[in-house]
Length: 159
Image (cartoon, rainbow, N blue to C red; front, side, top):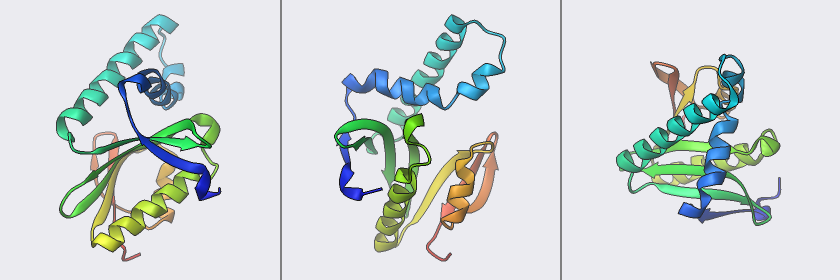
């Protein structure tokens, strides 16, 4: 992936539909397992999306909420919270068509370099069943804890 093709812009209210579509794309396999009709599934996903959004905005008001763009078109979101000792990847999410393209790996490596330069660790919560666990481990993240369906991973630059 050519880095020059990737840009960022701040998230705006006009991105609500895009953000919901990105979020719901991560829940497709889960939704196949429930006996709900399409309207029930959408209602549930919208409620979960709104709860996640409210949680992020309430607990990470000063975070970077960015739209990832490829050739000027939105293809994902990146939420980062930079604290005194930690650079937290709150969310890195690409559209299904861009997963596995190398964009995520490239962006995470940039985040790791940013943290290394600042003398910080990088942390992220990842669902146990998320295939990205392999990516984080490959990039040197270590599992530090488990919270319900999430693992806490940290990268300290020691790997």
